[in-house]
Image (tube, rainbow, N blue to C red; front, side):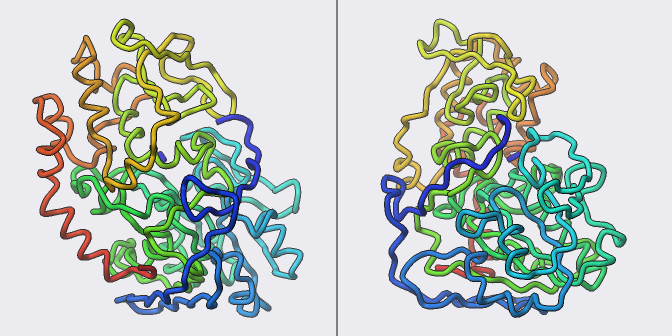
Length: 424
């Protein structure tokens, strides 16, 4: 939940595998058959092409539909068409964009995690930019009064506690209540190759998880939108009219290198793929590298001096982490910057052994999960989505034993998920 002065990182080409990013992904087209079970959904199939194309890139599929409409856009720096922001690109194509809505980190992506973001006027375009991570998370009736259709184009990373899917829900609820349609320009899920973690305990519903999905949910934004509708998860069980521009030539097993960092502290492909596991450490008294230029690729704490030889020192970094945990203190632990991420791809599972190992090594175990020690810590239970995970780690249970306790909920979720898939 899910940052240096934000600029778009250098665009990198979409890769067919994590180890190769020099050429666009080449795959054999396998038409995905949408299986929505709710009303008012239109999923538009992509053209039969030879390379992966995001929904936003397939402008021929939706530009005619936008003609004559007043358009609102939920966007951030990941919302790009080629090398240009989607807002700038669509304005040049004559789309009447009347409002911009920004999720956590803001429209331009220059706010730290959890930071309050105010409404403003985008200086580049002169369009009013409304924050959905400030005084209100849900667009108001007034916000939508001059909007005919809302576009949602935000890159997600496929993890329950990454807050962009919460923004999606709030936007769908507001649009459903006000009779507005949502056009979703779908993007690949970089962690879409696996599904893992306990299904959220309803007692632990929070901003880190709103619904009964596991930590790694295995859905694109478009697929999750269908689940929100189909499972009746929107407020008052409303159904939102959605239209989805699917990703061309994508399947969930594909490796996908994001061309733009999705948020300030996920600034490398390594961090994005380690995030589902390492973000759990935000519920511990260990630093995950916030306050460094390599967040979510290292782990450590001052108390582990003598246990590990590797160390790093968190510093205040405006726009990334102004007051990081263990600021200006040497933290000792694990350096995962060169960890072979194919191990996770092959196992298709969270790496629980790291948190088990570091709990065993930690000298003051009563401090390990005590989120009252710092405002920079969160609730481990809410992150995990189950009380049992922390209890099992403290009890010395093995990763295999912990994982076994996630059933039958995890298997039931996988079965339910199949109803909403747009891609193999």
